[in-house]
Structure formats: structure tokens, C-alpha cells
Image 1: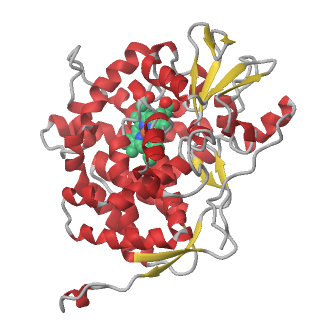
Image 2 (image 1 turned 90 degrees about the vertical axis):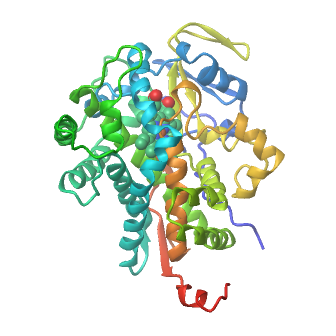
Image 3 (image 1 turned 135 degrees about the vertical axis):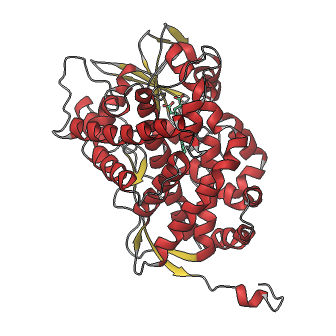
Length: 464
Ligand code: HEM
């Protein structure tokens, strides 16, 4: 029997004109790249407007992200599509402003706090399972996972479910923002000359304004509740009451709006994408699905401790993040001239780090395009996890929500598979494309059927 391979987008021919590249890029940044990037250590893209370098060599990736991050700050240009929505959020700032924001935000995501956040996460997972119970026929699972991940964020941040009026409206408007902003990719990764007009579609800025007004309403109410001593102990309260250890200052309400906007955007699109692909892979590999479903019995125990026993689920989720990293590429800017692999890198060059290519690098990974959650126990898997695995980035600017996401993802995956058996819907194979995150071109369609409840068997002391 031939081995089923996880879907991978086609690569473009090696040489194409700049305009063709820009066109392909606008459609999808993954299939716009040539196949050689899966083997190259470094590649240069030279155009009349910009020079950019894709860096795939582990020690160079380490240098940019971990050893000298201050010499490779976030490029201003990445902010272009996001600024109307995200303002001065931690995702976009650099230097002292960024450092201060991380000092205030990081304590809310520390290991110990995850335990406090867990009941809200579990409640969101239960609500997601319940929503799926009502579904018959093929289900477009990205829609469901987006809903679930947004619910996780609202419950953990503000102690409100997605059914809350303001939460629901923020969720819908965020989706419209992303749909109305197709130039985001192009502006972010292929920096346009400064003189070229930015073609925001009518309504995009207005939509960003409305989202920010809705978030402002939540943060203002929360500030009042904190002052009145009746605020719930959730992530928003934690962040809004944490003082910068160096200056003693806290975020004011306006600064908090910027941060909430990024938590919502960074924390829900990414988790939703990873969970949707994980479920699709489980449909494609039923042996692994059965193993995850069997392991999920540990979730009878509703305490946080049970999550540490979801080992198979975690390996599956980790493998999903390797094959379908939700943030497929990141961009930095060289603050000074460099020499890498004997090539001159001028000041101002755009440095592209590509989890997508690094995670499938043919000279680093065994079976790079195959789905194998057992690889994390092998020598090659362990080595590559250290050197060539960056789904959450690495170093000082590592994702604040990495620990959070590694609890949320396996938990939701296990909760869903505990309740349902899933299969790919006939005739609807997904095609990965990257917009803000890695999604499928035509959705991810699955057929769900309930697993038999085992409770009555348990009472006879039998197990299967
Ligand atoms: C599977 C889920 C997730 C993935 C794969 C992911 C991935 C990433 C990556 C790659 C970055 C770095 C981007 C860059 O440098 O250009 C990042 C940054 C960030 N993420 Fe996540 N993320 C996930 C979930 C979350 C969650 C749940 C939250 C918060 C609740 C979050 C909050 C952030 C923030 C605030 C940053 C900016 C950090 C900084 O620049 O200092 N992420 N994430």
C-alpha cells in the first residue's frame, strides 16, 4: 500500500519575473516559492525595490533570533497592514517600548498562571464539543476551530464566553478585517516602495476602528471593576494590575486595547489553524486517531494535572505544528551590514525566517514531508527539535502564548476525539495556503460520527 502523504502545496518554477512573483505571492506565499528553498541554507531575492534573504541554516536562525535579536528588529513594514488594528502592540514594537510591554505581559503567561487559566480553557473545549454534537453531514472544521479558539481567548482573558454580545461582534469583525485585507501579505513580505499607495479597501480602517472601540469598552469596564475591587482573577486583570518591575508603571486603558487586540489576533487565528490541521491529520491517519482517543480517557479527571498525561496528543500536535506552522514566515530587518555564508547582507535588508521551509528541510529532517509523531522520540527528531523547529519563534521575542497554546491544542484535540470518530469528507482534500496563517484554500471538511459512550461498560469492570 502506498503511504498517504499530508497535503503540501506545489512549488513554483525556479525562475519567474518579479511581477509574476508578486502575483503568485498575493495569492499564496507558500506556492509562490521555488522547491529549492526546502534544500537551501540561504537564498537571496533581488528586485529593483528591495533585497531580502531567506535564512534556513540552523546557526544563522539561532544568531538572528537568540544571539543578536537587537541587531535584527522587526521590520517597520510588517506593521503596515496591522497598525490600524494593533496600534502599538507588543507584536509590532521594538527596543525599550517592546521590553517594557513584555515585562508587564510575561508574568500573566508564566507556568503557574496556566493552572489558573485551565478551568476556562476546559469550559471552552466542552462548549466546542457540544456545538459539534449538533452537526450532521460534512463539517468545515476551520470555522469550528476558529470559534473554539476565540472562545478560549475570551474566557481566559475576560471571563466571558464567545456568546457574549461584545465578544461575538469582535470575533465576526476580525474575520471581516482579515478577508478585506488581502494586501497584507504583499506589504509585509515583499516590501513595496514607500511611494506606492497603500490600497486598503474601503471599510478596512473603519472596521479596525470599530473593533478597537469594542475592545475599549471591555477594558474600560474592566478597569472600573478593578478599581471597585470586584474584578475576576483572569488574564486581563492580571495584566492590567501588573506593575513594570523597573518603572512601577502599569498599562493604561489605551495601551491595554493594543495588547488585547494582539492577544486576540495572535492567539486565536494560530491556535485555530493548528487545531484544524491536527484534526485533518487524525482523519488521514486513523491509527494515530485511535491512540489519541484512547489516551483521552485521562480527561475524566478534570484537574490541570490530567493535561500532563496527554503525551500522544502532544506529540501529534507538535508534529502538526511542524508540518503546518500557523505562522509560516517571519520578517526581520538587518540593522547593520552583515556577511553571511560569504555573501554581503546590506543594512536594511529584509531577513525572512521560514518555519514552513525549515520544518521540512530535506537536509535536516528524516522523512521531512511525512506525518510521524513518533519522530520526537528519535535522535533525529530530538536534534531537529533543538535546531530546526520554531513554530513559536525563539529567543527574546518568542511567542508569549507558547505554553498556553501547548495546553490548549492537545486539550481540544483530545476532547474532540474522545467524543467523535473523524474521517476526511469525500472529494474535498484541503490545499494549504498562507494568508495571515496557514489555512486551507477551500476549507477543511471532515465527517464526524459519535464514539460509543463507554460508561455502562465501565460499571461491569470491563475495558476495551
Ligand atoms: C499554536 C498557537 C500559536 C502559534 C503557532 C504562535 C506563533 C507565534 C510566533 C511564530 C510568533 C512570533 C512572530 C514574529 O516574531 O514575527 C508569535 C508571537 C506572539 N504570540 Fe503567538 N502563537 C500561538 C498562540 C498564541 C497565543 C495563544 C497567544 C496569547 C494568548 C499568543 C500571543 C503572541 C504574542 C503577544 C506575540 C508577540 C510577542 C513579541 O513579539 O514579543 N500566541 N506567536
